[in-house]
Length: 170
Image (cartoon, rainbow, N blue to C red):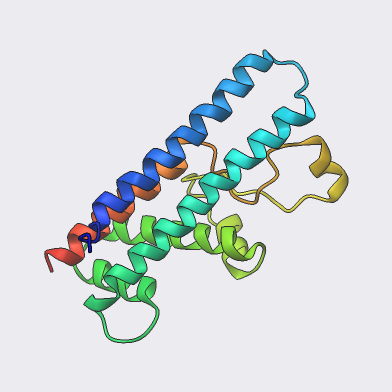
């Protein structure tokens, strides 16, 4: 039986997956040279965007599962945030909370996490209002969270790794 991968190794693999998807989206948009995208291009961009969303949700779930042992029962993200705040890591606590909310939005759509992100103007990532079906058919970037920006996944990885190091060294 092979040894299981460490959290940083799993994060690196997810990051590579997301980067490949982001690169493919950029390539498609560059090839379009500002012209309207074909239905095949839209379908491929949508597929790559979903791959990024899935990688983000998966890696955050792995982080939560691997770090749960640092706390007794209960919601991990709240407990990590409290521990970070108690240790004076206010920025990291805020970034972790913002990413937690974004992952909730990716998993569940509109709701309390989406409303909190819309009301928070942190600028960490683009949060969108829901669109109707007609507008969605004309716009390929209709997700509630813009995961196609390099900043989204890079920020998620950086935040998770910092929180992992904090908990590991605690």
